[in-house]
Image (cartoon, rainbow, N blue to C red):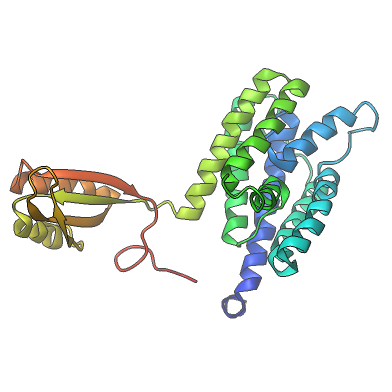
Length: 291
């Protein structure tokens, strides 16, 4: 089975999307919908529609039905503009999400507890979306709408368009469920985004360090020998004094940053050092790049 997936990476992608949408549906049904949290996107609209139609239809219009119906016209528009090949995984993701929203029952884990609903729902939904993105797919909705709109207003980023659309959906949710739940929804959206980014970029963050020192050779030796990390010399020129010097650049594990700073301070207490996060590091000594 594993060898077959390696030979056909598209199977892995579709499987990740299928599993990811299952997690998304659990979060939507068991955390957000049961607590009136509108998390933006077409799923947020589905939660609003379900609540509004409950007096007319027992239980309201199911989330999966609304999600699918909203996406169908977007599918046709996307296929016309971008082609079926580009839309194939998006269609699979949307159909999978609607399927899971229909068959997965509500799990009474956090009903009535808004804080837990936001935290647990945000983590589960973020993980699900992250898996979908790792499978190089989407679930349609506002991200697809934003992509289509951006083709005609290229000066506005897709992220900004999505923020506007999702913001409008949350505002509508505030009128249906109240402003307090709308604020919980904003927190949930933030958590979802953080978890999704973490899953995509990897949780093994590293630190990138820039060092300007008059003792380049000794600092380099300490990094190479004591930390067993590589170091690169970058020719730089100070614009104030016009002095040319070698700036050192190195990437170390987050647990090594204290050791590195101590080593530099021992060699040159007057060294100028910049430490920044390296969200994803691929290559020797770190994460292996996988296609």
